[in-house]
Amino acid sequence: MSALKSKKIFLILSIVVPFLLYCFYYYGMMVKNAPYKFSEFQSMQFEFGYKDRLLNKYDSKTGDYQYLTRKDSLVKMNMRLTNDDLLYLHRKAAELGFWDFPANELSEDSTAHVPRYIITFTYKRKTKRIVFDGDYSGPEKLVDANQRLIKEIQSRLGDAEQRLKK
Image (cartoon, rainbow, N blue to C red):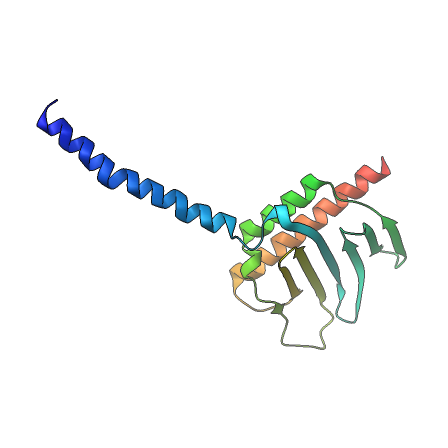
């Protein structure tokens, strides 16, 4: 074996292999200790309406779903989201940075007639709950992320309702 080949093997074994082992250890611990894992997911609650009346509600634990129609009649039903729906919403929340959102994203004007959304994800060890006003004037990226998550939740609820009607 040539000296050059021996040096390359030594270099690989002494630098690259320990680095790879460290990476697997470090990132393995991060994933293992992640506070919001789907394997620990228990339920998701979603409420929306106006500040004084949050009549539209969904609770994935009980399946209770109620919403106000355009004609102001309250519809109540029991509707379950599939495990795939819940996994999708969990991943979408993670993708949008939901875990880092501030708990209260309220508008300055408390008299305005604007929609309010309350989103809660409950896990075995932690719960993340945010309150978001439709006219919140925070950072644009945060407002956009909230609106996208709300649309995704409403879309999944609408899909589940369509499946139920079939």
